[in-house]
Length: 246
Image 1 (cartoon, rainbow, N blue to C red):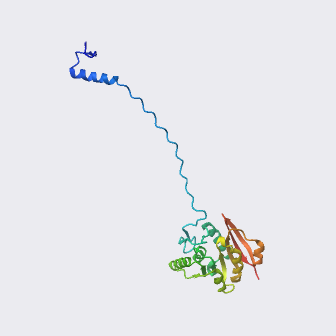
Image 2: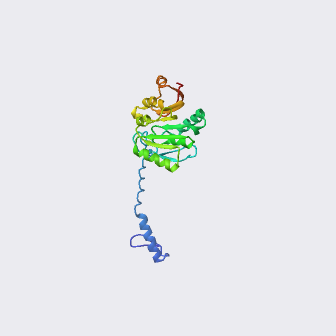
Image 3: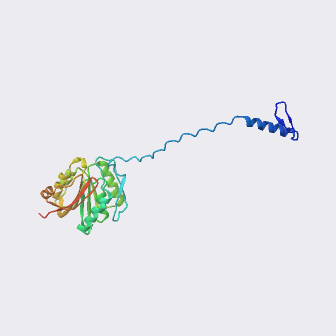
């Protein structure tokens, strides 16, 4: 072995090309080792996005008829002031009550004085009612109700666009066996309408009411009605009332 001009030890037994490769590797070994990169800072855990609640009290886009020959028929919920459809579970309960109290619904004459989607009236027609009158003061709502009536070919259903007072004034006394009352909650009309429909209610007839508060027993007595069933679903109080014998 001998030393090269640079002082490196050279093995003569190694071919020249290999010696040059060894020299290069040794030079590389003398180069400083780069420092290990510092770990990247850990990102803070992301919080799960919260589902944004829908507007309080916002009605669904549609409801469906739940029983009878028109079962599963969708009914649109229009964006109209005061329109708030009766929840499905409440309708199930109410029609179970009616079928228990009235029995065969095929002879029933029904009035829905604030029809809205028409869910209560079309439900009654779906179950075979003899006559159903749907009343609503909103022209768009009344037009939609007529569209459903024509699509279903529901011959027992009539639609009238009218203020509720004017509609009642045109009806004959004792002309309905079941009356549905679901006035707008912000109108404070429930008491007035319950008292007003007593005239068109047949003996032993039934009034369904829906409102933001329970009805007072003293007021019912004054109107010639007695409570038969009642329930609550969230902020909605609903009742079945029966006409007292005169």
